[in-house]
Image (cartoon, rainbow over all chains, first blue to last red):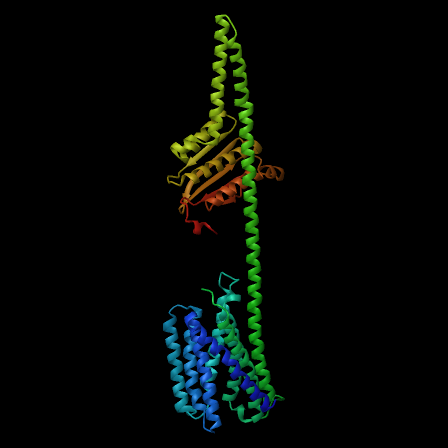
Length: 215
Length: 270
C-alpha cells in the first residue's frame, strides 16, 4: 500500500464529507435534536480536516487539534447515545461519563504525552466507548416490540458506520499507543485501512441526513 | 520488534483491524438476521390471528343464519300453522251453526289463539330474554336453570357468588354462553347433572361449567364446533378466556372468564 493510495483516500474522505456538510446546513431546521448532534459532529470533523491539512502544509504541528477535537466529539457522541439508548438518568450518566473522559483527556494531554503529540490514549478510549455504544444500541433495537421500523430508522445506518469505523480505529490506536507504530510501513497500512473505513462512516452520515426520521 | 509469533507487525495490524471489521459485520448481520426472524414470527402470529378472527366471523354469520332459520321454522311450523287452523275455524263460524256447536267452535278458536300467543311469546323470549333486561344476569340465569330443572330430565346446580355489575352487552353475552353450553350438554352429552359456579376473581367474572356426560369426542366436537366458536367469539368481545379443565370424573369442565367493564377501544385491541 502506497502513500498515493492513502492520500487519495484522504482526499476522497474530505470531498465526501462535503455532502453531509451541505445536507446538514439545508436540513438543520427540519431535523430532530439527535440528528443535529450528528450534524455538529460532521461540521467539527470538516473543520478539523481543513485545519490539520492547513497546518500540515505550513509544516506546523497539528496534533494539538486532535487534543481538542477528541473530547469535543466525545461530548456530542455521549449526548447522542444517551438519548438514543434512552437509559434511566441519562443526563446524570452522560455527565459522569463526559466528566471522567475530560479529566482523562486533560491528564494525558498535559502530563503523559504533551499537547504536541497525538492523544492516542484518549482516542483509543473514545473508540472503545463508541463501539460499546453501537453494540448496545443494536441490542436495544432488537428488544423493541416493533420489529419493522428499523429500515426507516436513520440511526441504524449511523450506528453501523460507527461500529465499523470505531471498532477498527480502536485496534489501530491501541497498537499505535503501544509503540508498534515505530515502523513507518505499519503507519501507512493502518492509516490506509482507517481512511478506507472512514468512507463508510461518512456514508453513514449521508444516510442519516438523507433518510427521513420517523416522527 | 518486527516479528511476533511468526507474523510481522504489519500483518498483525492488518489482521487485527480486519478482525474488528468482521466483528462489526457479524454484529450487523446478527442484528439483521434476528430482526428478520422476529419479524417473520410476528407476521405469522398476525396471520394466525387474522385467520382466527375470520373463523370467528364465519361462525358468527353461520350461527346468525341458523338462528334465523330456526326462528323462521318456529314461526312457520308453530305460529303459521296455528293461525291457518284458526282461520279455518273462523270460516266455519261464518256459517249457520246451532248454539252448542258455535260455542264449541268458539272455544276451539280461543284455545288456538292462546296457543298462538304462547308460541309467539316463546319465540320472542328466545330472541330477547326479558328477565335479563329487567332483573339482570343472575336472575336470568336462575330463571333459565329453574326452567330446565322443572323439565326433570336434568339437574342443574347454579352456585352464584358474583355480586358485581357489568354492561348489558356483557350480560347478554354471558347469558347466551350459558344457554349454548347447556344446549350442548342437553343435545350431546347425555348428562344427568350440570354444575355452574359463578364468582369473581381479580376483578374478572369467572364461570365454571361442569357436567357428568360423556365428554366431547371427536364427532361431538365437530357438531358443537360452531357453538363453541360462538362462545369464543362472545368471549373475545369481552377480553375473555376459555380453559378446558382436567377432570378425573366423566364429562366436561370449562373455566371461562372475562372483564366486567368495557375497555376503551384502543385498549381492547390486542
